[in-house]
Length: 129
Image (tube, rainbow, N blue to C red; front, side, top):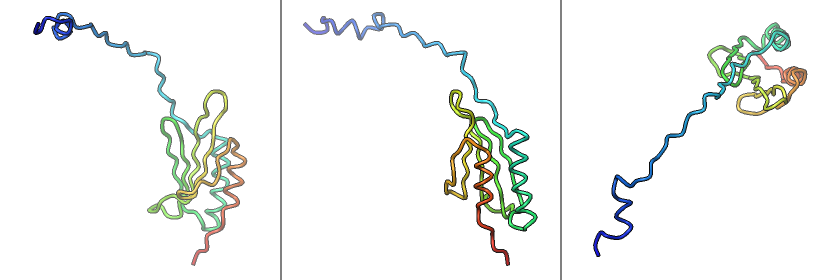
């Protein structure tokens, strides 16, 4: 018997199972734009201004995006940042996390701005000619 088995019903478009589209969730939350607060910026700019006064650093940039903020320090505005401090909101109730990088090297990952400032103070001075 050709074409008369149970398989013929599944190929018939009238007998295909109906596929219901999944509803999209309306409660998706977009991550908020992360910013450094005044106290954090005061601490970062205090260290920055001391290094500028000594001629080691010359420029900085603050980048605020969804999910993180970055304070970058430059020796020259045309170069890549010497040091960057990223502020990343923590999951649940863990607070924020700060990540300090020198170029592509991770210097520290901490939850304390005081530790970030200590790491910045420990950075070796640049020898300028």
